[in-house]
Length: 359
Image 1 (cartoon, rainbow, N blue to C red):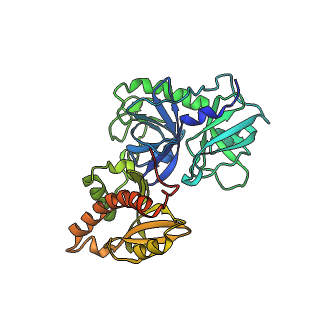
Image 2: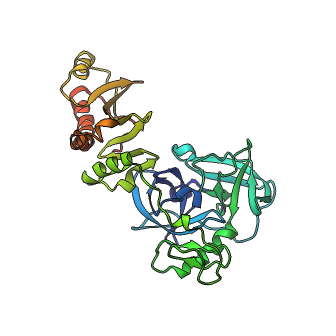
Image 3: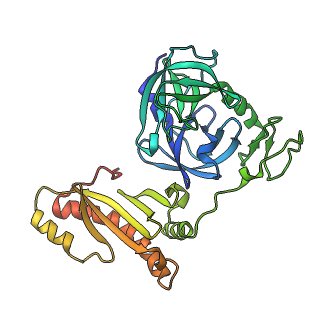
């Protein structure tokens, strides 16, 4: 067996209210694996495949000490089987591939070699490689030349150039054994001392008496503006968990249009969507339409040959007497963007932008 690009389909992006990372699907077990620090503060996350489809997932087991988390998502996923390497540690100079979503960008594969198969860092052993590893790669697999997963990428050590680290697959195998204690797939924390799963917020492990960091049971506290935006998204009929893409930032598709909602400079609530490419014909009529005010309170604009529709409000309006009006405008914006990209394509020949999700 050798590395084949088909296995890329088993690699998903993880989106949370704190940022994004990578995970991979173990089809034979029906679970996703990522780093704990990718999902820390979240018990519910969104997974995104290569076709930009999003799936709701629960965090069912965390091991903060090993920086491993296991996720469970409803549904069946048409992916190839990822095989885990069970023949022992890789060797120095072995060829490896790092698969993931660096900086939240589209899926990438970087190639390198094993620099050290057993590098001691902060009291634990890691696989060191010279393959490029960046924030966002965290939680993705490191794959050997024969296509087997040898480790889980972690970017928590990123102080040096041309150095990447991975958690050896043996650590994951141990955590998968612990998962047998959690048949109901509830949120659980692995005790650092004895390996027993802890399901409730408590100070000590019932099995061994070891200390439990109760902060791991806390969800990240949303800001007031996050609550407002997620209320609007939810009232429109979209699960806000599936829309989260970072701190006070949401990015998702409504129909074909990519929607971005974010807070700019701590002062403005922005909704924007790159809906179409600039047309090559009917330009005079097109510009007249762009400059008209027929879509108020939304504005059409052009940036780098792309047509955007946007809505902006000072956040003071969110907490004042216009709160409900602003909320309704946000909800209407989602539908407006989805309608407008089709209108501009049909009326002016402006093709959908490359951010569109077309079926």
